[in-house]
Structures are given as C-alpha cells and as structure tokens.
Image (cartoon, rainbow, N blue to C red; front, side):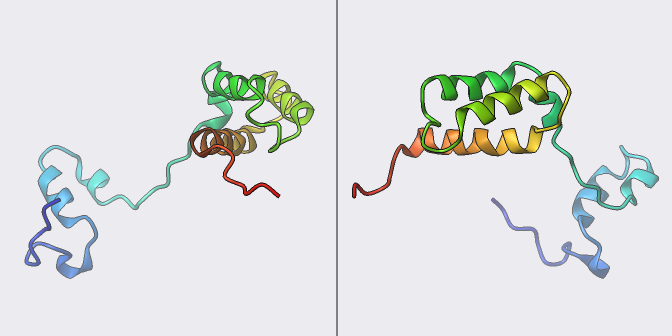
Length: 112
C-alpha cells in the first residue's frame, strides 16, 4: 500500500478528504457531506435462505459441532428462524463462525 502524502491528509481534520475530493465531480454534494453510517449485515434474511444454513447443517450432520453445541437446540433454532417465528440470525451466524473455526483448526485441546 502506498501512503498518502501529508500535504493532502486531513486538511482541517476532515475525514476522507482525498476520497471526497476525487469523487467530487461524480457524486452529489449532499452525499459527499453526509455523516458516516453503519452497515447492518442481513443475517436474518441470509439464514432463511439455503446458503449459510446449508453449510451449518452440513457441519452439524458431519458431527463437527457435537462437542460445541447442543444439536437439538441448534436444529430448533434453525427451524424457528427459517419459519420466521424467531430471529436467531445473530446466534446462528456465531455458531457458523465457531463451526468454521473448528473445521479449520480441528480439535486443538490437549488430551487429558
């Protein structure tokens, strides 16, 4: 990555000055002056589709989550979420990340 020269960085402590100046002819002024906004990940929608749920179900079926989560509880949460009765998107996302982490690293615990 190439650093930005100090003479163009933060004039008047304005954030993203170089980016705003570069896009000034292509974007409306109101957008360039707009405040920073967050970005919400649409996990509730994602988990109602087959995508991440399919991957989570594969990990569950393969027994990859046996030592990590209660299978019955997880299956109930998936079902409730897909049926739209509950929004377990954030929890399912966390379990999916845990499953992927475990799949990548395997069981790293020392035998007792």
